[in-house]
Image (cartoon, rainbow, N blue to C red):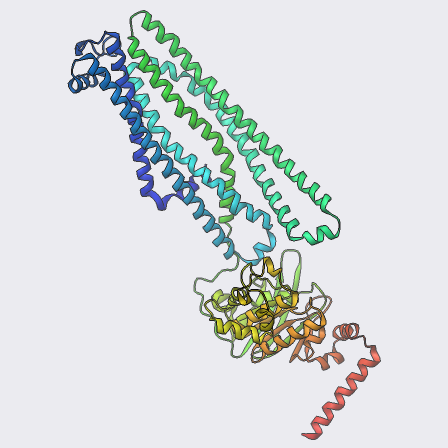
Length: 625
C-alpha cells in the first residue's frame, strides 16, 4: 500500500487534469444512474396502459420518492401516451450518448496521465541512476537496473491506470446504491449480504498474487542480465562453442519466470469467479425475495425491475474493482522495485558547504590514505606528493591498486581514512563538477557512444566547434584516418565503436581528452591493449597531450613510463615501496628491478651495466657543469 500511495503522488503535477477526470467520473455516474429512474417511469407507464395520470405514477412500492421525476416527465412531455413514451426513449438515448462522451474523456485522460507518469518515472530513474556513485554501479547488475528502469516503470503505468479506475468506479457505485436504496432499502440490504464474504478471498488471493509477481519481476531481471551478458560476449560465446550451453542456461531462467507467472495468473484467475460467486448470493436472494413481494402486491413490477437494473449495474463496477485489486497486487511489486532504486542514495555527493575546486597550481597530496571496498583493504597509510606539471608513472602487479589511485583522485570513491588535498584543499570539500572539470581520463578500453565520430570527440567539451574537434583529432594523429571513413567525421561508429580498430578508438579517446584541455591528465593503461605499431602512434599522441599538464600514468609496460619525472612503485604486499626516476629505481627498488628485468629481457648483469652507464653519464654531466 505504501508504494501504491507513492505511485499516486507521482500524479501531483497533473492535479488539474485529475480534477477534470473526477468531474467526468461524477457526471458519468449521474448519467449512468439516471436511466434507472426514467426507466421505472417508463415501465409504470406501460403497466398502466399509457395513462398520463401522475397520481398513478410511483404507486405500488416506492411511495413518493420518485414523484418529482414523474411530475417532471409529465410536465415536459405532456400526457399523450406516445409522446410520453418516445420522450422517455429520447432521454435514455441522450443519457447513453453523454455516458459515451464521459467514457471517452475518462479513457483518454487515464491513458494520458498514466503514460505521462511512466515517462516521468523513467526520466527520474535514469537521472537518478546517472547521479549514483561508481561504487553503486560496481555492485549492481546492469540487467537488474535495465529491468527496473524499463520493465518496472511500464508496470508503474498500469498501476496508475488501475488507481484511476479506483477513482472512476466509486461515483458509479454510489449513485446506483442511492438509487437502489430509494427504490427499496430493505431489498438493498439483502443484496449486499454477499459483499462481506468477498473480503477473505480477496485478501488471500492478492497476497499470493503479490508474492509470485515479486518473484517473477526478479526473475525477469535475471533474464535481462543474462541477455545483456550473452549479447556483449557474443564473440566469446561463439569462439568457445558455448551457444548451446548459454541457450540452455537462459531457458532455465525463462522457465522459472514462466512458472512464477503462471502461479500468479492462477491466483488471479481464481479471484474473479470466487468473488463473483459470493457476490451473486446476494443477487439470488434479491431475486427470490423481490419476486415474492411482487406476487404479494407489496412492490410494483416496475419498481422491482428498476431495482434489479440498478443492482446489476452496481455489480459491474464492483466486479471491475475486484479484478483491479488482483491486477494491482500483480503490479505493485514493480512499483516497489522502482522506488527502491529511486530511494538509493549516492555515497559520493557534494558537501552542503562545498566550494569550487581551485585550479591546480602547487601540488596534489595523498595524506595517510586508506581504502577498503568491504572485502579487505586495498592499501593503508598511503602518502604521496605530486607537484603541479609533474609526469608520474604508477606501476606494480595486477590488482594492487594502481587504477584505484586515479579513482580516488576523481572521487569515484572516498578514502576510508586519510585525505587527498589539491593545493591544500580536501577534495571532499569541493564540488564534484568543478573537480572533475580539471581532469581528462583515457582508459585501457575507451568507451565510444553509438553516434558519430564528431560527437564522440565533442563529448570532451560540449559545444565545441568543428574546427576545435578537427584540431584535437590532428593532435591525436587520427584525423587522416577519420576523413577516409565513409562519412568522415559524421560516420556512426556503432555500439562501443565496433566499426573502428582498437588504435582508432584509442586515438579518438585521446582526441576527446585533448579537446577537454584539462590541467590534470589521467592515463589508465591507455596503450597496454594495442600492438606495437599502433601503440607508438597513441604513445606519441599522449606525449603531446601531457605537455604542460600534471599527468598520472598507470602502466603495465614499464617502457611507457621510463621517461616520467618519477615512478610510483607499489609493492606486492600493497602500499608504495618507492617513488623515484627510472634509473634510481633500478638501483633502489627490488620490485621495480624485477619487473624491468622481466619485461626488458635483460639479466642482472645487463641491468647492472645499464646502472653503470647511467652513473658514468651523471659524472660526466656534473664535470661539464
